[in-house]
Length: 78
Image (cartoon, rainbow, N blue to C red; front, top):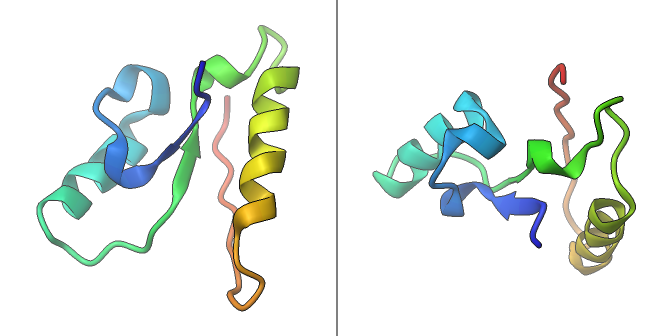
């Protein structure tokens, strides 16, 4: 199962939220939105803790990000 999605690949706000879905729509309509990822709600248990499979997926994604850029992390309430 996938828990982390590139913003331009989001098709359903039910698992990624309205803001990520809106950003995806903007990207797919050619508007300038910085590249990014979203961690789906399915990546968390009922207490809001990230599950091990999602944590592993996040660790693998971080490994492939180039070091030459700065990155920002935005958190939303769960």
